[in-house]
Image 1 (cartoon, helix red, strand yellow):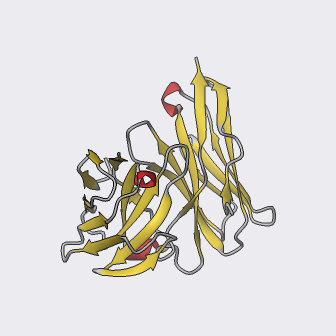
Image 2 (cartoon, rainbow over the protein chains, first blue to last red):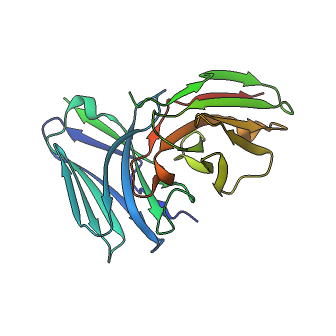
Length: 115
Length: 114
C-alpha cells in the first residue's frame, strides 16, 4: 500500500520551460512534505519543504504547492535548467512528529531537461 | 555537501554474512535515521535513533539493528544477509527527531549480496 505516489516515472521538459512534478498521498496524518533531488550514485539532496498549515512555499526557481483537500502536492521549477535533470522524490511525515516514523517516499520521477 | 558522511561507499558480501555500515551525522544534529533504497524504488525507513535510543522503526525484521554513539554517529548492522538486502543504504541526520526540520542525507553505502 503506497502512501505517497508519484505516478509519472519520467518527465521530459525543454530547457527554459516550466517543469511540474506531481505527488499524491493517502495518509491524512501527513503534515510535512519535502522534495529531494537525487543524482546517480549520490544521496538525496533536500530541495524544498512545506508544512500543512501552508499551501505554497517558494525558494528561488522552486515552488511547492499543497492542496490538502485533494491530498496532492506539486513542485514547479521555473525556468528549467540542464542541471535540473535528476530523479525527484516526494516525501512526507506524519503528525506524530515525523521523525519517529521516518519519511515516507514516493518512487521518484526522473526529470530530463532537453536543450 | 550535507555534512553527513557514510562508510564504506561500496561493499560486496555473501549471503548469510553480517555487515556493519557507519554514519557520521551533521554537526549539531542529534537524530540519525537509516533508509534502504532498492533499485527503482524510493528510500524506505528502517529505524531512527535519537539521543542514543531507537525511537522509531519501519517494517524491517530484527536482523536489522543499529546503534547511536554519544557523538551522535551511528551504525547499521544487518545479520544473516539475504540477496534482497542488496540496496543503497542511506543515513540521514536531523535535529530533534526531524520534527518539521530538514532531514539531510549522506551519499549512501551500496551493498551487494551475492
